[in-house]
Image 1 (tube, rainbow, N blue to C red):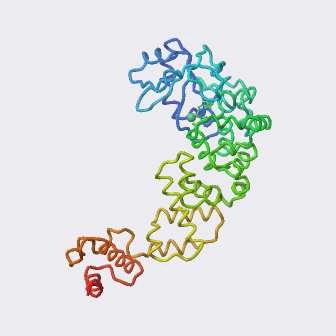
Image 2 (cartoon, helix red, strand yellow):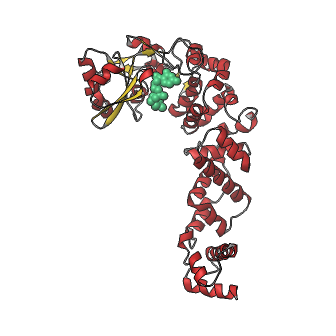
Image 3 (tube, rainbow, N blue to C red):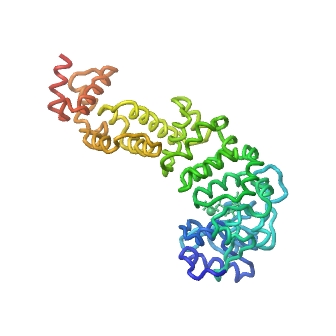
Amino acid sequence: MKLTNIPAVFQAAMPVLRTIENAGFDAYFVGGSVRDVLLHRHVHDVDIATSAYPEEIKELFSKTIDTGLKHGTVTILYNGESYEITTFRTESGYQDFRRPDHVSFVQNLDEDLKRRDFTINALAMNIEGEIVDLFDGLTDLKKRVIRAVGKPTERFHEDALRMIRAVRFMSQLNFQVEPQTVAAIKANHQLLSKISVERIRDEFVKMGLGPNARQAFALFLNTELADECPDFKGKREQLNVFPQLQFSPTMETSLWAVIVLLLKLKDIEISRFMRDWKNSNAMAAEVQAVVECFDSISDHAPSDYELYQFGKTTLLNTIDVAHILGEPIDSKALVDRYTALPIKEDHELAIDGRYLIQAGVRPGPRLGQLLDIIKQKVISGQLENSEEAISKFLQALIN
Ligand SMILES: Nc1ccn([C@@H]2O[C@H](COP(=O)(O)OP(=O)(O)OP(=O)(O)O)[C@@H](O)[C@H]2O)c(=O)n1
Ligand SMILES: [Mg+2]
């Protein structure tokens, strides 16, 4: 098969391929970019595989970065774009179920494609736009199927992360996982425990945010991959709700907040869970805020001061989470009320701590309390946000 309409991202990289070929080596576009162009999806990065060794590539281009020399990868900068160029390689000969420390370089593309994870990811394209398809990846693309290259168990033993990549692609691409590949995941799910949480998390988030997330999540549970993930073991009943949600999350904060709410985690358990998944402190704090906001909104109509304390981002994220969970809340009323608040941030208050000191309040805890009282009165509409009104109120309060 030959691609006739070669998209601009590939056109831009053609001179790179030509330079390598003119030096007497083979070079192909490989991996996700070839898959995505055939699916008419946005192509984000164009990877190149070659028979040249990294040192040979470095001689051909003036700007190069040693991004993964021992894995055979050099990044080159060309015309303002960066390209990862990797020497044909195979990953056999190691048994720790993770990416190998050392790889063996091979002389031809076929050997390189054989060690790739799925048939749809084992396609290559040459400079003419001709597709190299050794494992019927084109048929699988058409049938919308994720199928391991060769024997699935061998592929998963090479890199156990591939098992969760299968459900991730199922979600992102809206594909089905082929039965033998599913069976091999079920049989080997325990190998996932060998993989670092960071790598699992990245795939899990991509799965959770894909358009087919709910169906993929069901397979993630059924294959027992979930049992190898932090804090998910024994939580089947709670997690089973995910595939039945009204909508799939589209924001990472919402994904984690939904999971935390399904698991019914509270306070310290939330921070522990977020830490177990190696999430950033910022993400953990956001999720904690959304869960608190959700609990309060589903319990009672929040006061103006509560709305102020949640803040706009948390409020909007919480509305998103409520929508996903099918929790009936009047989001329009909440947003309207938030929009109508007299102030949205502390600095919008007509007075500050310094003003209070000048008015005779001594620095200390009392000053903070007074500021809070004033802020609450202003936010609830009982006190006008002006220096004059606040000054009058203050005099009455102090005297
Ligand atoms: N565990 C892995 C990871 C990657 N690959 C191969 O390396 C390519 C590039 O990997 P990566 O960028 O992680 O995935 P993509 O398929 O490009 O998907 P994405 O669009 O998310 O980058 C894959 O297509 C696949 O051929 C693999 O065989 N096994
Ligand atoms: Mg990629």
